[in-house]
Length: 188
Image 1 (tube, rainbow, N blue to C red):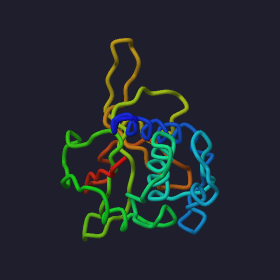
Image 2 (cartoon, helix red, strand yellow):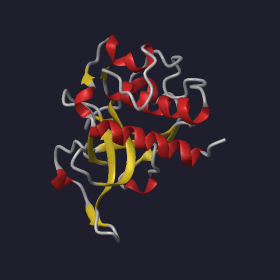
Image 3 (tube, rainbow, N blue to C red):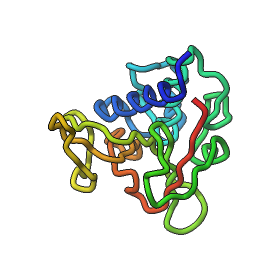
């Protein structure tokens, strides 16, 4: 039986893979956003349509499906893996503070973003931590991401999330690219 850490690493790899192939998934907030589940699509295939919450839910679901052998109970939205949005995501999982430092994040946790005013969540992404840069990653603003060199000389992007919030498809962003953020963990 894989450990929670192994499942989280797999989910992280799925999200990173999606950011490397961003053009394969369009952005929609319509019913087609659940195409990954509706059509039984599992990694390495990618869903043809999604929005931010459907993408994060699919990354977690496909990780559970592959590593645990089944989806199990919908721990992300409580909708039997058939529906949900950022608002249902905050009703599930464990809240880990509204944060100002990424030190509270672990790989595979979600980032729930809020508007500058109000208490309604507006966006979600998956925290993937540090990743080695490659030319296939979709990164709209590389200058905004903290970087370091690994011992082997590779460029490492530090403390990043994979986000699917635009027509361009999933992309890598700094963990705090939106100002108000809360970390949430779901059982994997």
